[in-house]
Structures are given as C-alpha cells and as structure tokens.
Amino acid sequence: MDWERVPRYLVNFNLTGLPREETDILIIGSGIAGLYTALKVAGRYRVVLVTKDNPAECATDLAQGGIAAAINEEDSAALHLEDTLTAAAGLGDPAAARVLVTEGPGRVQELIEWGIPFDREGDKVALGKEGAHSRRRILHAGGDATGAIIWQGLAARAAGATNIQLWPGTMALDLLVVEGRCCGALVLTGAGTLKAILAQAVVLACGGAGRIYPVTTNPAVATGDGVAMAYRAGAEVMDVEFYQFHPTVLVHPGAPGFLISEAVRGEGAILRNQAGERFMPAYHPLGELAPRDVVARAVASEMARHGSGHVYLDLTHLEGELVQRRFPTITSTCRELGLDPLKEWLPVAPAAHYFMGGVRTDLNGRTNITGLYAGGEVACTGVHGANRLASNSLLEGLVFGGRIAAELLNQELKPSPCPRLKYNTLKDGGQEDTGNWLAVQEIMQQRAGLIRNREGLQEAASTLESWWPLLGYPARDRLAVEIRNMLTVAHLIITAATWRRESRGAHYREDFPETDPAYRKRLVLAREKEAREVPVV
Image 1 (cartoon, rainbow, N blue to C red):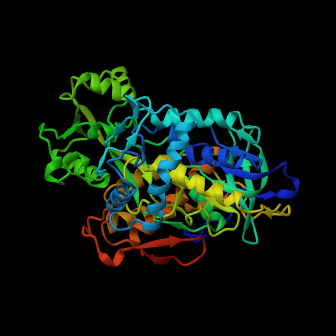
Image 2: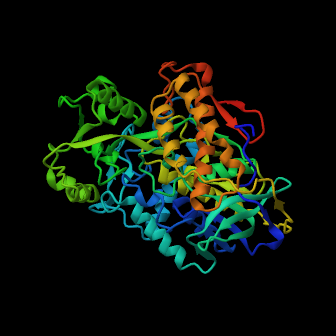
Image 3: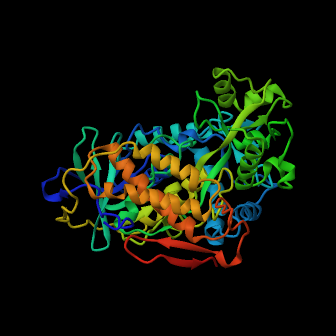
C-alpha cells in the first residue's frame, strides 16, 4: 500500500445490518463549540451530541486564562483585530478575524445573560492582560478556572434542553458520505459495538490533536480524531503545519501538561534561565508578553544554552493576595505538588497546546462536503493564521459555533435518504502495535515539534511510512482508532511542514529561519487530491 494513501474507513461495515439512530443534527464533541451550537439550534431541531469520554473531558474545561473580548470603553474591535492579525504573523485571514472580534462581545454578553459568573471588580467585569494584547480584555471566572465554569454553565443548560440528547462514551469513527453529502456517522458505543447515527447535518466540534506529542496541555481525548475522520471523508484540511506550543507548562512528574496560564505573565511574572537571569527582553521588546511562538522558542533556546530541561517562572515578587485570588487553581495545584509559587520559582518548559490548522471551513462553518460543518479548534477558517492570540480560542468556539447555528437555522434541512453503504476493503487480521502511540509522540516531538528542519522531517516521514501498513487492517477498539487518527494527523503535519520552507509563527524551520513573503499562502490538503496553494488576500 502506498504509504500516503489513507483508507476511506477504519472498519469494514454494512449499514443495512447495523443498529441506527436518526436525528436532525449530529454534533461530535462536548466542548464550548459543540455545546453552544447545540443550545442555539435546539429550539428548532433535534440534536444528538456524542463525545467519546466523559463530556467534561475537553479542552474547554481546562482553559485557564479566559476569553478575549473588547468590552472595555478604552478598547475596541479594531484594536483587538490589530492584535489578532499581528500575532498571526502575516497569515491571519482578515475577514475571519474581523468576524471574531466584532461578534465576540455580543456572544460574551449572551454568556453573562445566561448566568456565567465572570469575575468582577466593583460593578464591572474584571479584565486581565495577556501576551500580545494591547489592552486588558480577558474576561475570567473563578480566577483561573474560566473554561471549567463556562463549560459547567453550558452543560447544565444543555441538560435542561428537551431537544438535546448527550451520549457520553460514544466515539465517532467515520463520517458517512454519499454523493458528496454527509448524512451521519459511524460510532463505537461504550459497549464496543458499531452503530450508525443518521442526520441531516453533522457538526464537527471535537477539538485538537495535542496527544500526538508526548507532553501537552490537552486532555487525553485530543488525538486528532476530527481532522482525521474529516480527511478520510474527503474534507479539505488547511494550515496543519502550525501547532502552537505554550511556553510555560509546569515541569513536574506529578502534573504532566499542567498549564501555567499566560495571564500569570500578564500580571507581572517573569521568566528566568538556569543562571537566574531574566532573558525575554533580549528576545522581544514585549518581553514576557511577546506572542506565544516567540516566548516558546526563547524558552527552548535558553534550555539548550544551559543544557537544562526547563527554565523558571518567577512570581515571588508579586503580591501574594493577588496571586492566590487571581490564580487559585494554579496556586493550589502547585502546593499539592510541594511547590509554593509565592516563595519559589516554578520550573516550566514549552508543551503542545493548540492546533491552528484543521478542517477548512468558510465563515459559516461549512466544509467542502455538503451537510458537514466544523467549529472550534478542529476547524480552520484562517482566523489564527500562523499563531493564535491568547484567549481567542474560547471566543472562536462561541463566535463560529453561533455562525454554524445561524446557518442551520436559516435553511430547511432535508432528510437524507438512508444510504445503503457498505465497505469491505480492509484486510482481515493484523496485529495491533499499541507501542505506535508512544513512537508517534516521540518522533513528532523530536522532528516535527517546536523546531524543525528538512532532515528531521524526512526522518519522521520515513518512520511513519514503516507504520503505515497498520491502516490496512480494521481498528478493533478505541485505542486502535486513536493510533490510526494520530498517524494520519502526524502525516498531514509533516507534509505541510516540509512544504513550508520558511519560518513563520509557530512553524520554525532552522534550515529556513527567515520569513519568506513568497509563502504568504496556505497549503490545502485533501485525500487522494493534489495539494493546492491558496494565497492570503
């Protein structure tokens, strides 16, 4: 089998003999984008929302910093737009970014009206500062528990909606597509059986792919399932070379991937190397508040220079009451691990955090497959370009989730004829090599992580090629599905990173360290089609 060829489905099946469920809209994913979309359409449509684990097991629940919106009289959508496009390193889509920043305040106001308890200072909503923002515009809740509090509020509201069925422990395997139209999905139930969910529209909202790297801030479920299944179905994917590494993740065996929010630096924390020196001003005029890609590479540079596995984040000069009030989760977690952020420097290093690339959509969440939509981190409108601005992620889920809902409500959904699909191409047998999980993570970290070069990418491609025959056999369980999805997404990232012979935003090629104006364009990939380049207008 050609190593680049990806089989259409992960399992052999005959739809005629499978148990099935029918609904108006199927939503895959239980984070902010999925829940918000479900809530907005449930007044009119029946919704089934599936999630492969506990619904709270999502990136939204882990989000600390907050949600960015220009709601202060000293701020404006124009300033937020400028900051978003500056961070995007010349690759941000201006139209998508304008939608994000202009519609964002209204979506946030709706959350307030729904009872989400954002922190307040007197009679006003409290606003924090984060890297590359020119104003204080980060709304937060519970200090540094913003995502968890928003998720709990949306989940409670969804639980009370009669038109929303939430199916936990139900993993989407593949999208069912007939004659260019998506009409549902194959799912793996908690009992380990196959089932078909037929729907008039399908919304992917299943997050990122941080688990293709060994250390990530993402939840355990983030194995790139949405991008992989969309790619197998023929959807276009875009900007997949851009994987953001958060610069300050705690280095401690008891808390792998525990994020130390950028908002900590926004309140004045500074980074120090092994010699105790503050180093960020030497790398960027904004110091610790430079864009994330700049800070992450600076941290990696200092780690290499001193031969250390971490640098330090110093909060000890900050007022203790401020730290404990603003960052209660971080403070309590560190103390449980034997670290006191008020008295000692915290060991931190970069870790995989956010996928700027994903399933290519228009500004209403539509993909190139009729009836298939995507929103949140799994999607790519181009809004983040080569580097996402801090706290624009929760906002993206709200704004584009709302646009998907509006698109669905503005049309008459038509029942899809039940497809008589069957697939029997995969070979019998095959031996599962679960060791591929760790092997994929290791090669991606070493050769397609924060710093890349041609030789390393070629080595990663060669290694993937040796594992590729695994895709020719049916996936037997959730782990087997996740390994196949990780292999597929890793292949896409390596393909795009090899093509982009420049350094821009989160993509850094040490063999092409400069930004090249000729690469002010995007690479669009689709299964069994030639890659195509799209200029940024």
